[in-house]
Length: 483
Image (cartoon, rainbow, N blue to C red; front, side):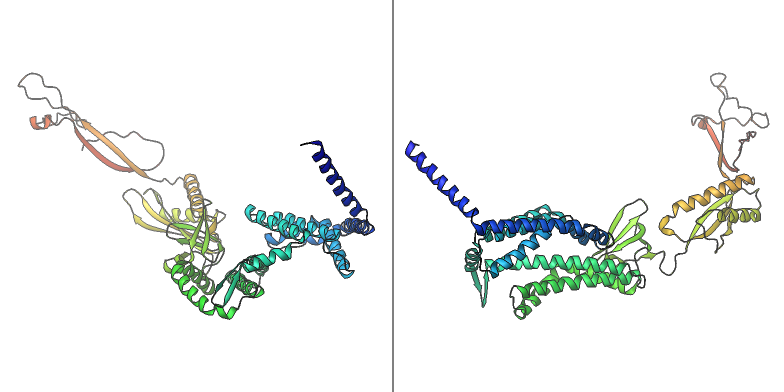
């Protein structure tokens, strides 16, 4: 690049800088900067004065998590909120005074509004992709407004359209419909969660009715949001009647399982067969119901697993509700004692031991019955009641068994177990070739037993077994007996 080109470039840069300085040093520009600085000072003072009252009121709010995130996000940026509102009021005054659309006040307002939307959205929107889309859209709108290109771009987007019958669908219409529906559905979701939280706190309603009202409110708000959103962008709702009918038939076939689960959920809530907090058994699943949703029921088992069971399974399958009419549950424990024990005393001790367990209901005393005379024991069944099956059945059964063990041990009652004795007889070695084998003496009489036949000798050892019942306790040595 030669010297003449450099001089020309330097002259253009100097002229541009002088123009910028001349613009900023104009009385109108200085007045706008002063007004913007005043807005910043007012916003700072308002934030200082209102911080404590707003925080005190915010701590009293008990709303849905999504609504609380919005409140917290706005509270932490109250200075920016006040500043944006003040600058917006300045734009109204500037417009009334006939100021240009590209004034400094309007540029600052667009930038402040875009930054406020982006910061709040990044706080309340968990999805990173959605947050980035919102940020990009806010910066694009701000840039178009600052450069005074919003109207030309809108005309270009509106000209890009297709005709379907009597309907004209443009790119601008699609963008507006998407934005309006997204905002209305988001607001409907927040309102639905807020109302659902309020309904769940009502103590006058049953748990099943709370869930039913919450579901109906959410579905109704989403339907209203869709209707309002479509009407806001200019969609003729009467023209959608035939389309909605055909769409409903298609969804009925394609989403029949989803619809079936939804209808099953409504049936479950209306007939009150199950409700949150009930202890149920469905197939191999045993646990307590944590939540009823539109498509499934959340069941938590004793090992901490959470099963999401479709609502349809509760309609078509057999369900055991341990707390349907009342929360009392009976548990049976079987045991056996030695024949040396007094069954009347065993019954009394078993009842007293069961009553000492904390979870056993005292209002319904335990019962103990002799159920049979077994091969080695007197067989009993012990029956008692509890009120908290959701806390587990195996653990309380184990506590009762330990109480029985301690009580029987303290009273000298033995619990029998199978005892097996093996008595073995071996042949004596032959004295010589061709001689008859000598019989081994009998263990009990000392006399020689019958000689073993040659056929039996090839079989090896002859074994005799006998089973008998022995009570628990120190082992005793008994003399061996021949079979």
